[in-house]
Image (cartoon, rainbow, N blue to C red; front, side):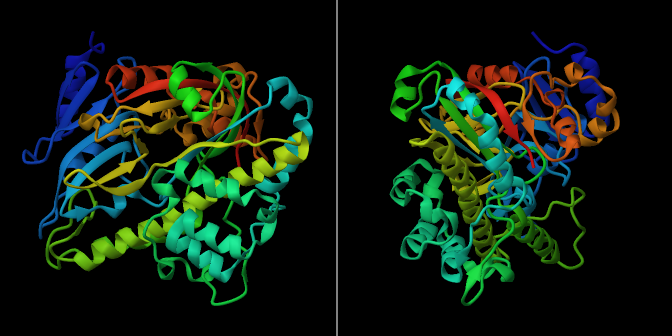
Length: 479
């Protein structure tokens, strides 16, 4: 079965400079004027809208070549695919040889997902829900959290991520983490992608966060952030793969909490700086690319490629610890309210990151790694199911999967029209959203997102992932 009016759609896309074909839920695209670029493939459910702007953004990304050497050898997109504000479509995945593309990652470096499970029933949780929510509002919204660190701990965080932070904090505990089970945190590091530790350099971090001595009080650390970022309490609604679920410690009826956040202002600082640097190093007198996407070449600037990757890793390290601390604040509050709660980590994985894979590097923007046997976390909207999956390592999609459902309505559209729509029309009936800004509920309403079930089904059919467990939302924190 193919989408309605397919021929008309393909003709319309051709008029926009795109050569597009369709087969079995996959659109194959390339710029008409870039016949040497790889064909990019976009996996979409049959009933999903096809957005020409997003297709053009992906085709532009696939055609990026550095005049000194370096090219994209493969490009694809996951079914949460939609246009990005900075010229890179969300859901894009590219494999590059001889070049890296700072703009393809953007500023929210290592935006990612973290999932814990909790041995509480929904009845036990709801009995003290209000007490728990008030404590979490203090931490997440009113700044009552204490994540103070020594200057040495902060440098170790940027340099080595979770491993460096743990070593330093074990030597000199500070802030609320003195109440944490540090041995548990250390044991859980093997459930973080790459151990939560990349090759960073603290000298590449914002100066105000890397003091010589004293204490660092970072207002951005352990914060959720805006956009589609959240912390959500969920219930393990259904287990599909009992063998894997048992091995990972997941059971039906458990509570769970899921965290979606990234590198906050550190990522903005590093991402913005390196987009500008890539543009500034473009060969003088040579026409800028029409896409305004500027790569860095290992042929002309190997030192800049190495420095960018280390800067990106520095921000990624910060993001890993940011999610850890968001989770730890919640776990500490659970223990205060519900007493003996272990709340073990299931997995933490990145989006928006460049990693050495394939023939060079794979850059994912709004997509996550889905290697064979690896846990994958795909959230729905705050009114829909989320999914714990397992990767199948499909090389056709660069061992990747979607990072969520994907928007179908912009925040601007919802701000303009959403307030006049009913709770039912927005999909907010029964949704328990904890936020200080009413417009956030509307901007992030379930009606803004594609149906998560179709996103999951089309990826299972394409053998990118398999379902391990389904989780239903109970309440969501939105900053």
